Amino acid sequence: DARYILQCVEGRQGKSHQGGPLPPRIFFNDLVNGTQKFNTWKDKDTNNCHFGEGGFAIVVSVTNKSVKNEPRQEAMKYQRPNNKGDIDAVETEIKIIQKLKEINNWENIVEFYDIFPLQENRWIFTMLPIKYDLFKHLMSEGRRDPLLLDHPSYNKPILTQLTRLKFIQSMINGIHVLHQNGIFHQDIKSDNLLVGSDDVLKFTDSGLSSYNEEGNNRR
Image (tube, rainbow, N blue to C red; front, top):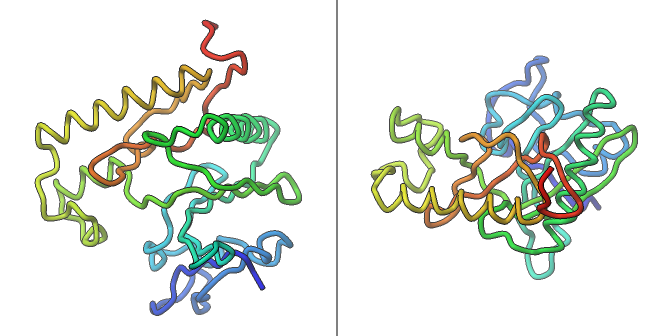
């Protein structure tokens, strides 16, 4: 049985961009052996589990059935780099994740669970699922986007003085932890700051980061 299940469109209506019905779930094993591609379901009707994407990666919500007691919801980042530069970037990101797991300070950085190397220079990372980044968080106040109705702060004032201070403190703390351990994010923007509980920001997406394994020595 598959360890991970991608349940994107269960109970939803619609068709894929290829005209066929949207599949209710995608199994982790199907990604490993290449029988299932994410672009067969990626569609506007999958917003409930499609967290985001980049040049050669996509982040989705999955259920990990192997966790003791009860299944755990996780975010899965599936990466398929296109050239040597992209492969080098992923390998650097893996080193950064391994360092972050070693220091185990996730207060202002998204926690990573596992790394799975696949065939043909593909990788899968699993991490703490946080659906909303700072950009969506702020836009939900400005536009009341219907897609953000389930956002916990949808009907609350967002940029109170206390919230601003929490955001600033979160960024300072997160950058300090990264730099103290030789990690330089190099792509800090609202899309890469996830809004956790109690308005605590968490850094994510170190795909463009550099890493000095000797620590925070000046370069």
